[in-house]
Image 1 (cartoon, rainbow, N blue to C red):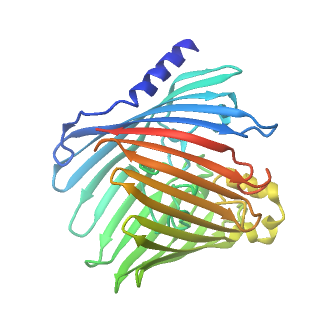
Image 2 (image 1 turned 90 degrees about the vertical axis):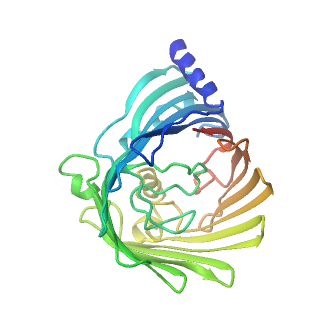
Image 3 (image 1 turned 120 degrees about the vertical axis):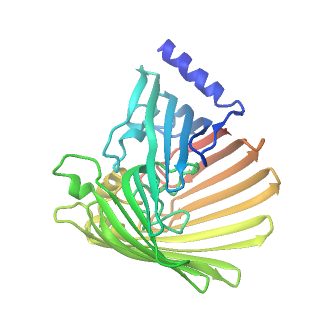
Length: 400
């Protein structure tokens, strides 16, 4: 335990120091850069047995190697080393499984520190977060390997982002986890194109078809409006949908809609998910975003009156939320050229629970940032947000 704690504290301290080094150039044959991060977090009310106070300290080193030896191809590899010190209630079931995500068919997770007792838990892990090769041709771009795939136009909720979407409460969105996939981008003109993306999923051979994802996405721009149509096989069934985003008299508008039809025997019902959002810059230093989510699966007869099953599907990543109707809002203000303030709020119309997330972002230098924030909840323990702990955190980031 002592040895693991010493290694963990060393990485936590290193994560606070500025980073200055860079090797080569990723636009040429080889380049190496990366980031160091430290997260310190404390929470109240995490345990279901009563009000408790818990803590988490995490350090993360990400090394990024990449290059483009020739004009027609390039590569990129992200290696990550995480060290976390948790109090007992954060232990085991709340550990991140970065190397074992659903759309990762190859397991790269290796724990090099794994020590726990009745009071604390120290864990150190290594994993490959991205590893891709891209081939560029005039008619298409082909990317193979572990890659970050982002589909969608909204902020809080993206029904069309079927591989590894960010959660609505996630405050750190610098890096998106990679999935093992093949992606082909085919431009049809200067403003339109087709994207094909597929991942075999993770599981036994019998489960692979259920867990696999493969979609075709068409996109275009018409009179300043971006439009998308997407269809294909997703986890547990089939999806078809689309989205529109654009600007109308200074008001940013966006919407997404997705229809889901389950495979036979799948636990999810047939349903529709829809998001409508708008945004406006009220001044040079103030902007506001608002979104509404219709979470149709939670409103179906089989799930609407079954709280435990909805909670189980949320835990498995199959259901976005337990509630059928939610609203999210975010305001961002530039207090000074190096200090930004944000406040976001999520409200469940279905059960009247709420989460508020204030935050400050300080740019210490071109390569270093400090984030201070919190997550505060309102509602009964069995509601959408009432069961979440109240959290305070500080995150430090250095890039090199």
